[in-house]
Length: 249
Image (cartoon, rainbow, N blue to C red; front, side, top):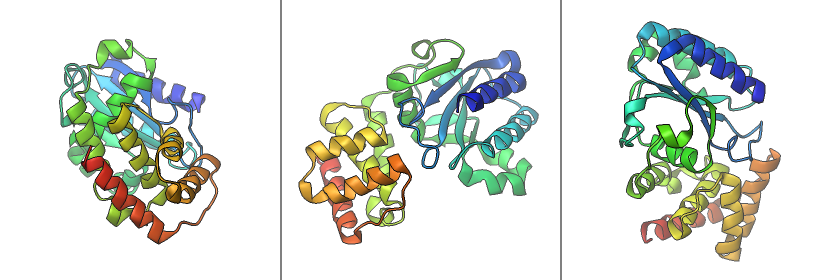
């Protein structure tokens, strides 16, 4: 993993040159619970000015090449300008974004991708909150110098945006939503900024015992990479209960 992070940072330096402000790691790799089969490498690149389409294309070609070397879920990254980081702007504008789910689009029509993959992203409030609390600077000034505080209301809205469809989606992504719902509730109840693994551990201490088999299954899948089975009825009941708890905080 460290070699990939070094290569990503070198790529950013090469493509953005003196316009590069910094490269920052957040997510599971920064919080000490990265699992090669279940996690992606979450990165934020900060630049001084919006890059040209030619620079974006060169950078994306390099990111895709690195993505193919990265285990399992690969790389997820966003490029943002320094002026939206401090004071923090929400919903947060971004200049470029990539994750494995976009790979086919980029391969099919890179020019279309470069033109359209820009806008605003509510998820960046959650990413920047984790970065401020638990992140790692790979290159550039310290995190606290570049990133301002994310208002709690913006972070909560970002979290809700991510889990609001849990009832409809939990059967398709039971591990992700079981653990994510737990860490959202943990933040609302005691202000903890947790990883998925830590969210599961928190849930085992704070949620009713009837949900423990579901939570333990999600933790087993996430931490050990095992294929596990989930009780669909229990997952749906858990999603509904957790959404109610989150909405009433």
